Length: 343
Ligand code: TYM
Image 1 (cartoon, rainbow, N blue to C red):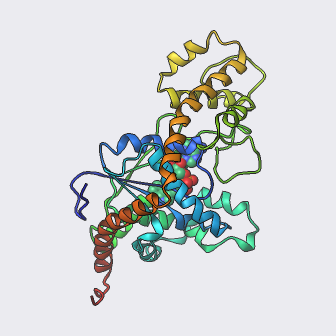
Image 2: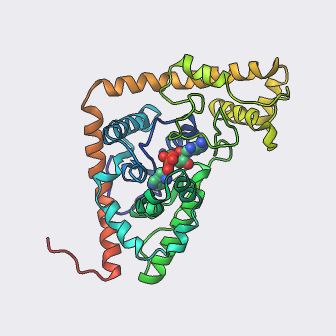
Image 3: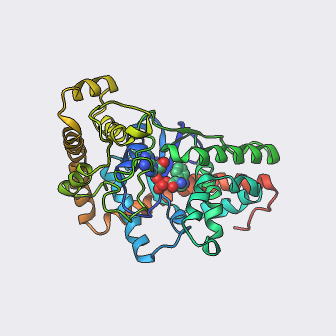
């Protein structure tokens, strides 16, 4: 396929941090939407490695996870013939535009970000990196560089998307029309899959304290089943969708079932009306999750059996992404009053 710097079709941009193993939460909130939307938009899917260094990390692990996440994009159904898959740090315009956007983003906007407050609270106050506060500006640069129309993400990214829109509008007002103002695309259900061990907290790939918190996309079937069978629920028997925090565990299992089967809520509640308690629900959730994960794992093994395939794909992706990113960056710097650099 060809990618040109000017837009032929509406664009999608999204990304995942290589900061842990991808979970079924990432799949439902992000990757499931991406695989569907890539057929309707010119799409850019990025492994956002620069974001993954905003908290303490291990360099060898970052290297391994960057390749793993890229391979999982493909294993989950991203088609590199129609979508561009690349690594954020391979396209320097992401870091360069961040600096320009830093200078139009009021500090107060960043101090309000709930994800910053949550992540900072988990560290010693005097070791929180400046990059963690600046994280959403780098994310805005990611999105704005591609003149993105739509950003498919889970519900936890809503505030970052609002900030991206505010930054784009402020830049356009100060320096003239430069960036497309993007919209978030958040799934109506499954936007916030919860931890199996704590159904009031978001399922997260970077919380590894409990073995039973998350199902990972690469979990073998017996491990995935064991985690789901141990999911925290209430002491009742009623299997229905509910906003009641008491029923959060059962609701979470039903949302997972809904995302993996694509069935309607009415059909799901009718199906489970005859179930013999929560054990039966958990068993069936484990079955539908494993049925979806098996082909993903099979494709992942095939894709990673050739040691060079993913690296080559990422090199091509970076070239395609750079074409678009460079053009936007040049426009932004020109509008801000910089002299064009000598060739
Ligand atoms: P990250 O790596 O935390 O998560 C990747 C994607 O998965 C979604 N997600 C979830 N969806 C439903 N339930 C969950 N429990 C769950 N956990 C995660 C996230 O909403 C996200 O869509 N800041 C982003 C990465 C990023 C980005 C971007 C995204 C950097 N630049 C530009 C879009 C556009 C993040 O931390 O994702």
